[in-house]
Image 1 (cartoon, rainbow, N blue to C red):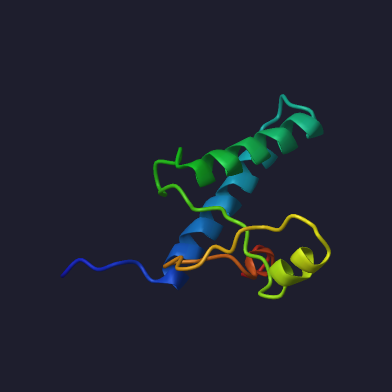
Image 2 (image 1 turned 90 degrees about the vertical axis):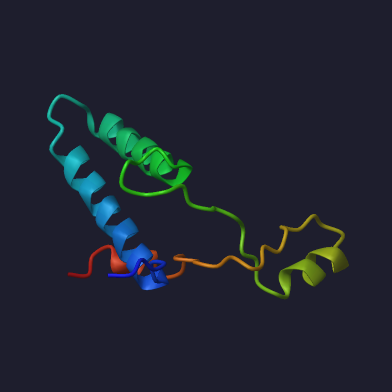
Amino acid sequence: MKSREFTTDEVREQFMNHVKMLIDYWDNVDDRTTKEKISGFAHSLLATIDGSSVELPAFVLAPAPHESDKNYHIENQENYYAENENVKCDIAGGLHDLLYKA
C-alpha cells in the first residue's frame, strides 16, 4: 500500500478519539478532586495540542476571525486579531458537536 497524507476527516477523527480517551482517563482517576481532574484534563488537552502526545503531532492553534472583524475594529480604533490563512488541514469547526456523537 502506498503512503498518503491523512485526510482532514481522518485527522479530526483521530483528534476526537484522543480527546474521548483523555475524558475516560481522567474520569477513572480516583484519588483526585473534581477540580484536580478538570485541571488534569485541561493540561492533557493542551499538551496534546502542543505535540506531547505519542499518537498525534502538534496542532496549530490560531485565531480565525470573521472576514469583517478587521475593518470593524479599525473603524472603531480597536486592535484586531491577525487573519491566519492557508492552513492546510483545519480540523476546527464543529468539534464540540462531534464530542458526543457515537
